[in-house]
Image 1 (tube, one colour):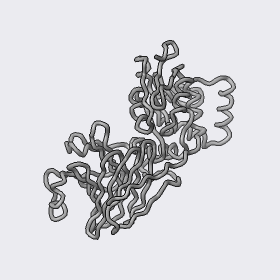
Image 2: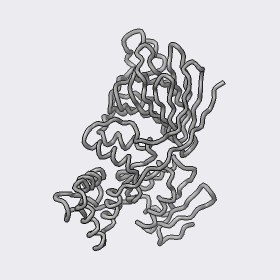
Image 3: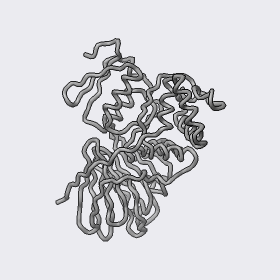
Image 4: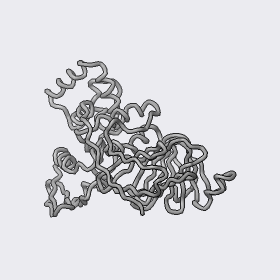
Length: 351
């Protein structure tokens, strides 16, 4: 019988001064704040570089244009944007580095919950509830990180390393063992790696997305797995390399994308407990936010759905989101029980 492990969440990160300034710049600086910003920039030359890099990450923000009086040549068009003041410092650093070159995609320093299992101990099941994430150290040296509402079965034998993703999202750092490849099964598909890193996500529409962050993996129909071990790949098998994003359960070559480093950091931001938005509508952002909380958001005013969202949010920080909506757009909210929040503009009644 398999064992089910539920692991605790990780603590939140510190705030970022640079991102707080970007948020203030975007909504408009007072004369006093303008002076404070200039003093902050003069205090350390590194502040200038950090502020500009943060602004470039959110290249559609009006903040770039608003910085024109302080720095040369930033340009942007005006849109409606929502920018939270509270930002996770460790992920911000990762985003800034990623705009320059590829980095080690491991998350920032935290103290995640860790459970160790033995390779010869049979089958185990690891699960995370909604809003939680966890990291499991496997006995072969691999590291498995689970996102919110995820369930994975793990089975190790002397001849095989097997994982079965039943729901949710996982990131796997695979210990190198050429004679014992690691196989992840999702429905009738497999992902095979000898020693590499990749991310797998089963979406709400049942699309299975694979993002390779290091090395190469093989993807194909489960029935073709023996031919990969014993001989050349069959036509149904696809090779994916670092930076590739593809839909596993379609295996259409036209679906493969190669992502820029900063886009990879955004997609993996959940490992540090963050959500990064770079211009999504509020309606789209709320769909993602709902993955990390039991709360359902209902937008009663259709015009609010097109508010553009940019910034870094802590997963599950519902109160922070509501405060930011209120302060930036006068969006009112009302709770209905413990699991529903109705949003409306201040000029409309919250029904």
